[in-house]
Length: 297
Image (cartoon, rainbow, N blue to C red; front, side, top):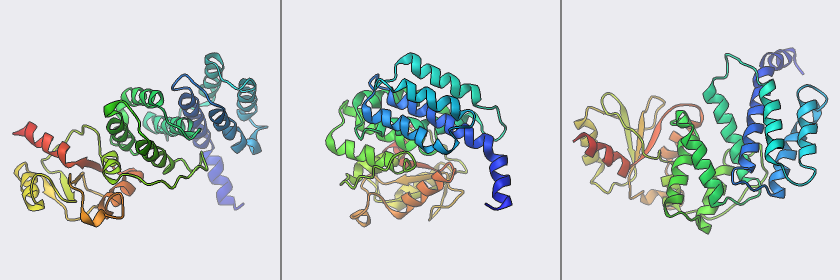
């Protein structure tokens, strides 16, 4: 290992530790979010221990790993055992100027999703628990992947039931950013319109004046030129492409013939990648865009 790497690890050690403990807190929340813990979800906890086996002799892992393994001996983790592990995590999480509460909560969300998807099955009770957590953490809105998850759950739970197709979409969606937590990769057919709805912000708040808008797809409320005039009417600016300084990407309700063999187009994919990099571009469905316009008229 080069000296630069050693110095980096030494410098970043508190942040790395905090991330791992926040993720563990999230996994604990995720596996118990429906008040039921399966054997596969127990394996998610043990998987966290396995990933840190090389440092299991060092603090705090030499306390946390034995505590987890003792807790799962009977094939379950009761509320008191969960609280013991969470308390120990909190004891070792350090106040630091590099991680704010937004970053910490996003790390917990990552863990929650890993816990929920660990057994390959996502239930209505788990989604309701996740919805409640998202509702309590509105400060994360516009931060990837909060909006995408929130919107997808809202769409799926609109009838209170997760059908087989929606379940496929959910698990695939989670697997996009849970590779480090699970090796489960599903190659399943998904419904383009549902996933397109899933990447859009749920009930977004739009501002127009001096904000940059980009349009993609075909629109229910007229041509792109007609929708562009609406943006200009409220003093918004138009961009032909998705750039780092974009504020909103508006997706037409009809989709596009060009999306026949993909879930969404190049502009949506580019906006999602920018969001993953931390840029706060909002992806907005045409119907939500028009609702915002009606509110202004």
